[in-house]
Image (cartoon, rainbow, N blue to C red; front, side, top):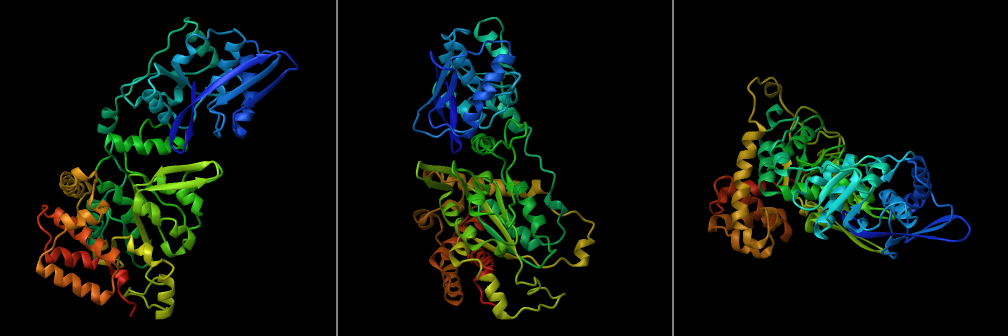
Length: 504
């Protein structure tokens, strides 16, 4: 019994081996992709070099279900054990108790694989007694806590001795609570940012409500610096969020020996990225940058420089929190609950709003530059904030600004209010509210209604922008204790729609 990945989730694969009379040969069936077909040579060399006999007969290995494509090198170990069981070199009676995975080196060593966490979750779901997998992946699989016993193995010979009862294996145990308690440390902090109080306030509001944000400012004003520090003020990952995030990174082989992703991901793809690289894709679809930023921050610097078709594919994941990729063989869904944070210059030369530099762009050039970002995508970004150049006095200021820990405390308190309010709707933050929740929780008084009506008529805001303003206003009220939405909250929320104003 082994497993394969479909997206970021694992499904069971039965590895069957048959040895028959006839011309010697080795054939793998069951829609095996390149890496699986190449495993024939690895398996043959590993069995011989580990001191066992490789049958010089006609061998057929089937990977069931046979109508699903399978890729990767994790079938090496179960294929080798299947062949050895079929040739009566190992006992078969215990094989069905275990879920087995591992890539074989030519000398019989067992190398790390991708997707070990998803496989361990499958083993728990299907009630396997134990999981045999490479030692390098054992800590990652053990973070699931209660469930099957996790054994990390180093060589084919070690596995054979264990199956024969000649060698005990030490179970690997993990304590996810302890891992999370020792986590949450970031190398950067908001106290390092000089000035930019309005931008920091906007990012605090964005973090408190899970809102997408866009920063507009001249080169060198600190947009990237602010974005890199946004994860430090987000609430700590819960165990469920950490597991979901780790599954994506494990499927891509990006854990680097880490058992669990314990800090909010921060992904910053270059503007030359393709749409498949951003949201995922390929013949056997893999997660893209959006899914790798699941439960974290996706930062798009120089937003207008991204190709338009790449930006447009973001519309569905920003709305739904997931990505569905359809192929002839079927559809796969990847998780994509991200905070989108983007940065851009106000104009092609970058100095449209900078009093220290003269802008060489005409209003038409500025309008054309900003039109590279479509209206529907801008509507999905709740907060637009100006980030002006920093003055010398602010740069030279010796007093440290507020730390990330202080801001994170306020953000956490606001998130708790939202969790209590939205508990019956299975929502986690204000940004996820729909029309029904807006009607129920975002009522405003007469002064707020008049202010919002004036802004909508003056700026020509869409219905989606109207909903975004209400959500942001609700978050601002939550940061002040969770009372009713007042006109001051509406006023601040309207300020965060700077790109809805016409270029002068």
